[in-house]
Amino acid sequence: GDSNPATVRTRAAQLANKTAEATSRSTSDSLGLKSVDANTRAHLLVFLQNLDHAQPHDTIGALATHPGLPKHKAWLKEHVLLGDQQVAAAIRAYEFTLDTDDFIESLDLIKRLAAIR
Image (cartoon, rainbow, N blue to C red; front, side, top):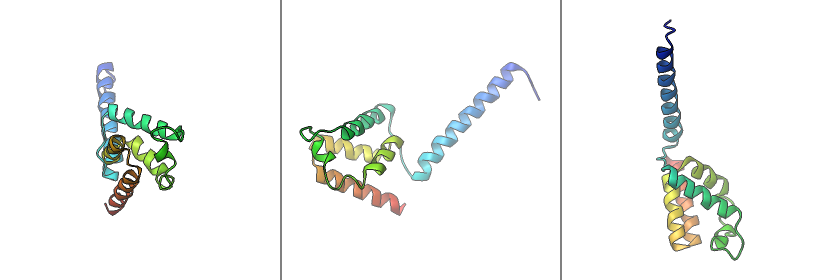
């Protein structure tokens, strides 16, 4: 083959780009997810961290101790890490309304819709 360093670098870059595209496409497409931007993902990760370290008197404490949360916790973390837009929207709505029952209901609905796909 051609061992010209510039050609090798170009081919390596093309391969890396194809791999990155295929990886991101297969991860999000196979789950039918649209992914959020980096700032939103960072915001969601902070939300998760706050949820993990919540105290009963914190604003998020009511959600952290909600009886409906444990069944969603692992799923919620996975979808936050994937940057799921629907989960991001549910979190933003919760932060605005602080309605814990509505948030848990939203997660139930998102999970059910994902299972149908």
